[in-house]
Image 1 (tube, rainbow, N blue to C red):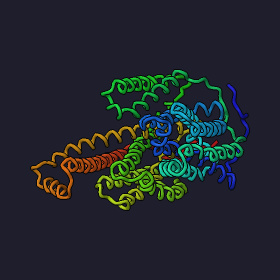
Image 2 (cartoon, one colour):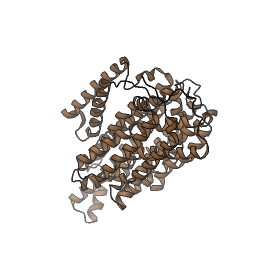
Image 3 (cartoon, rainbow, N blue to C red):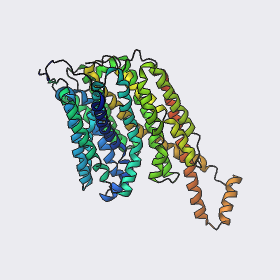
Image 4 (cartoon, rainbow, N blue to C red):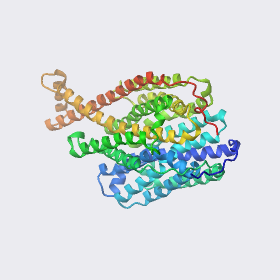
Length: 517
């Protein structure tokens, strides 16, 4: 076993301009990585058109990235221990940049999917290690601010992704959504290496758990493919989706059993023996499931049902970032004074209240009406992310922070991914249910329906045109009632998570337990 560097006295935390510069470099690299999970969403039709494939095939550009990133996140701890946290982070940023350029240069869908797959694999360790590097570089009394700044970038990036992606796609061309990563990534890598290369962590030669890695790759790959394509193939009515579900279940079940007994596990499941880690990660993953579901269905509803453009849907979504941006640093500075479980409880109550608020809207809701609850919801975001990051790190030694961050980010990513598939499917199915129920009221036995049909006839519409218009209206109202159901379900889930929080055991420290070097 070789260790590097030698056991010299640890260097003091960074201060002043160097700390500001490092924070900016790490924050921008994190922002860039998380942004790329959502920036492509609005560009899929343009990408599919230019590469001569269907829009459903175009969604592979999203799923390939998410899958590779999810697989690499729990590997972060092993890679960081093997090569050092600073080297791993800088290499991750540079790989991300290199494959971003290849994405922009892609001339076919297979080439783009391969580049996105590699871009996701390169980006996997970035988010977890960015938090680890910030915590180790900040003085202990200011680590709450470090967590706040980190959480702020992770939360705000997905909000601005669709807006930025839409604007770039409309005004430039889709390759530029990848090219913008180049200057940001190179600068972040250079600054981070310049400031931290003398602060490299010890490296340990640990053998790779090849069986665990194979089970992880196949299990997550099958699960991701199933989630992405399930709705298009009517879920388990399709033999392909059923097979993928069985493969995912078998591989992930065997993965858990194998990793619990492996000498050098690729995913350190022993972290779940820590009560605070388990409580924090469960609350983070399920909270993210509900939060991400709202953020996926809301802009879809605006565009497909209410006739909003991609840009206007993005503008209606964006106000959630305003209060999140303003409150994060204030919360970070005062973390040590607060009961963190109460702060997260407040976040879940606020999320539940605003979700319920959304569930009361009809299809005539104005832009300003929709923006207000999105703005209020922003208050809950930092109160949700920042304390939970601190809760799941509480009591862990510094050597486990990278592994814990990687595993927590993996669970968060999978929560988001599953949320996308489940909430969109639920919305579709509830839309069909409400459409069928509303159609029952369109009959000669209903005076209101008869009066409306007569009015349309007086306006000169043929019977076929009248029926077509009525079907459009029924579909719009059905999908609006369905989106109300999704929002109401998310509100219930937020409230159900509150009791789980109180199983966490204080004290939670300034950034977890033994964070010092």
